Amino acid sequence: MKRTAKPKTEPAQLAIPETEFFGPLDALHRGEDSVIGFTRKNGETKAGMENLFSLTRREVQAMLPQIAQWLLQDAYFTVNGYNAQAPYNARATGLPNVWRKEKNLRYLNAVYADLDIGRAGESGAKGLAVSQASQMLIDLLTGGTLPQLSMTAQSGRGLYAFWILRDDDDAGAPVTFQTLAQWGEALALYKQVNRAIYKRLDCLAADKICDAARVLRVPGTAHYATGEKAFYKVTFDAQGKLVTYTLRELAAAFGVPVMAPSLPKAVRESAGVCPARAKGPKALGAARAQELVILEQWRGGFNRGQRRFCLRTYAQFLRMAGATYGAILEAVKAMASNCNPAYPSDENDETADKIVRDVLGEGFFATHKRIELARWLRVTPDEARELDLEKLAPIDATGAKPLPRGGGRQVEKAARRAALQTLIDSGGILSERDFAAALLAQGIEASAATIHRDLEAMGFKAHAARKRAGRKSSEQLELPENE
Image (tube, rainbow, N blue to C red; front, side, top):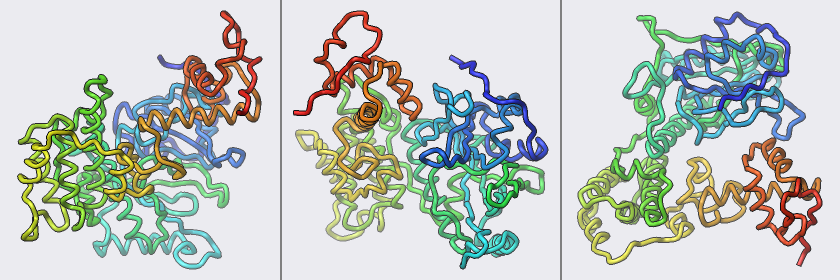
């Protein structure tokens, strides 16, 4: 249901003409239903940033007089497009909040480089003036080190460089979400291309960032340190069309290997499905197979010493997912061709057919523990976080301990209960509704019923106040006694 909250501000004027403001937004956010997230710097918040709102392109234009006030200084917008607005409002504006996580993306609009130059007094590339860095960028372009840019920007101190993406099947659209499995592979390739870009532009102090949830400065917003406004310039070809690339074209331009697709269609489509209990192993196999393919793309194929194990493990995952012999064999052969070197390469290497037949000939499913798989596959904590791995992840996002059984849901539950405990420690017991509101302010969604179950599990179930029918709140609850 659409929320009707009104922004808490009076109309204001942008510091630049609307055409200069909307030009870059239109070049990036070409999906009609693309949701754009806006944030700004705020030194009073823990992270130094605060969410402002998330709106579609049409909503931004309709509400510009009301939202312009928040965009005048140190405001940022999302490079890529999201599938929805958050189901709660931002505290700063009263408008729909931002869901700035990669799992909520719908469109990949551009790869980019954030050149951290213009820092007077610093040595090396960071001390370069904008004019010097711009000339160096031009030299790299004319020398063929970089493909033609789609858009550039002066950020108020540094520079941005963009290569705008188009979908393989629709030249007028950005890379578009299809299925969860395909999206995971596309995200891995997207990050690899971004990583290759910042390595190639290290001479210009490119930030070492490659994620897809990045925010960059809003056109026209002023930089707090310099007072300069962000200015964007979109590039068009000789026919007056926007300069765009497919992910594969940019991967080739920046020397990023693209793995031959191997995941069977049926397995791909079931990787993100929440199954009935009887189909749980099937969904687990599909999810693990998908994450192995994502890992393969990220690493550029599996290297000597791991090839046979990865191929056999892949066959086991696909068998678990219910794939047929033919589909498994085709998938394993495709992954084998992506290995470094392609498998088999040595006299004693087994053929893909033998690997698959051996796996299918086993009278049981090899259901290894996730921690063991992560160790055997040498999945690092950084890889798991970067690729948002769950079924093959060695530890949680904090790096402190192994992920609990159940994967992402259990992680969310643990984080929610930790946040509840922090609230209890700092302010005592609240009603479930007050707890829900406090968690929402931290970006954690939970219903009163969910919080009720959490409190019960945390040791509050014995208190009389939680047993009285029709109670208005749980304010009288006591903290559980330490044993």
